[in-house]
Amino acid sequence: MHQPRKLKAGALLSVVGIATIMALLLGLMLLLLRYNRSETSLLLRKLKLERNLESGTALLLSQVYAEKASEEELIDLFKEETDSISLQHYPWGLYEIAIIKSFEGIDTLKKVFLKGNAIQNDKAYALYLKDDDRPLSISGKSVVRGTAYLPPAGIRKAYIEDKAYEGDTTVYGDIKKSEKKLPALNTALIEQIKLLNYDSLKNRSDSVLSFYTLKDSVNRSFYQKPLILSSEDSISLENLSLKGAVVVVSKRAIYLPSSAQIEHAIFIAPKIKIAKDFKGTLQAFAQDSILVEENVELPYPSALGLIERRTENSVQEFTPEIVIHKDAKIHGVVFSVAATSATDFMNRIRMEPGSEIHGEVYADGMLELKGSVFGSVTCQRFVLQTSSSLYDNFLLDAVINYTKRSRHYLESALLQTAGKGGVVKWLH
Image 1 (cartoon, helix red, strand yellow):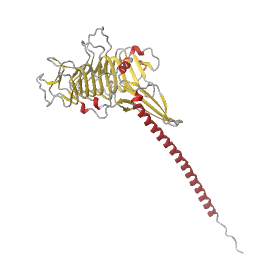
Image 2 (tube, one colour):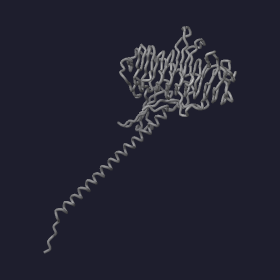
Image 3 (tube, helix red, strand yellow):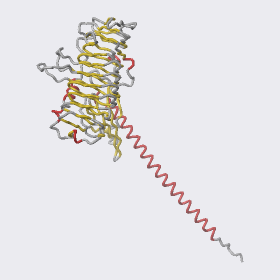
Image 4 (cartoon, one colour):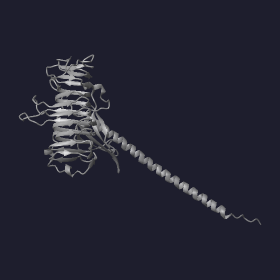
């Protein structure tokens, strides 16, 4: 009788081993499939949230939303209760902070940026000199390149300080007629900045601290409420680091040495001094004076503003001014705002030889331009002080070149000619 063959123990073990491996592989494949589905779902959700962030950004940059209040607003984008965003914007000096949050369930994406305004080509110019019934005289190596708004008296070549005008033409661009007043400022913005002073803030309790509680550094997210550091005395920022949503206010003066590390902070005081070799992005607003020493560099988007507070009957014993020394480079806005229409002790912006401003200069007073402006200049009057004389409405070896302004430059909200909103800088 034929006996059945017996399987060897080794063969049985092999079968069991193969089955186990196949089961493991199948399990791994199922886990991988599940993982891929989960990852795909997360990726699709992330893409959806990013798409909604882009929609929120477009809304914040629109002219319609710019006119809305600054409180946080929740929006259901497509009215399906699955695409929710929150939008918020608030003033930050001459610009605006814009915050977008996109969320679904527990998943949230958010962005914050500094908002500016695109330049309207039909309103762009290199020079706007108020019509004060006198001509502009130009001499030496001076250059005006771009559209120039000038008084009806026009512009003429002049010979002063042993120098004749070296250019082929007085203006390398169109010449148009200026008016007896400067382009209007955004008065609401100026009034907002005026409220940021020691006397207005000293009785507030929310997010206001004494400057002297500060240890060595502050890095404040723009998703948080701005931190205000105030002092009744003068402030020096020696070896300190301030970054983000920080406002420093002094009743007397603020000193910014080269050892200070500053990024996007705001400074407000009657007098502000930025020391030699300092480098940092900031906005500084003073009532009496701003002094910028040699080799200072303020990257874009920085701003220096002189905002007077005197009244018609107040006694003024000095000229409020912004002084920018040689080899200083400012990328952004430099401006002055007169408190009254009085012409005595008119405020002044003074640029020394070798100094540069890449952006905008708005002088609601006198402008002494011995350096270069790569962008636009708006002023009531030019003055020129030399060792031998004081000249009225004269340019000597001065450069105003609109064509050299960066094509990525966005204007602040200082003027009332704001165009389409744009992203000046992503902050997080």
